[in-house]
Length: 148
Image (cartoon, rainbow, N blue to C red; front, side, top):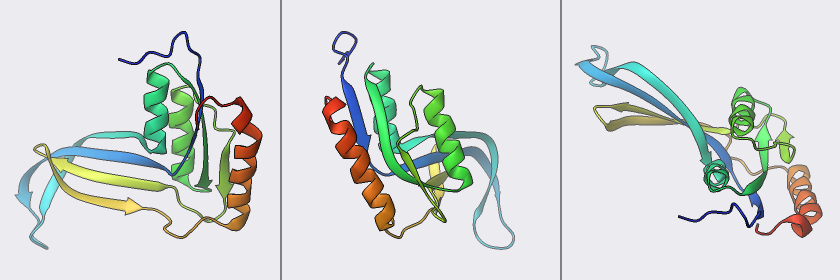
């Protein structure tokens, strides 16, 4: 296993952020409205996805990690920041873009089988202003990073 304990790398991760949500449950019947299973959800979990998963893995290996990305002004952005704070990652380089939704990919699972996945997200490109802010953060921080 890689261990960064005595190497102190400072890593800047740039990428798309999302939350992966899992709804776990059981199915004992089919809907009378349509031929689809009815899942009785008994467990709900949310984890960092996309570049956030990379950040989480690097933190677990002992690296110092900063994340740079564009997020929205939505409820999922608040949840995302909470998940980063929970693992000790500063969110100062997250650029908030109005009317943008951070991706939340929800999987419904029954009997260890994914039944359906639904996504809530913005699929359009980020705005030029957000792109310029990302580039600016990159330029200011590249000299302090061991790896990008």
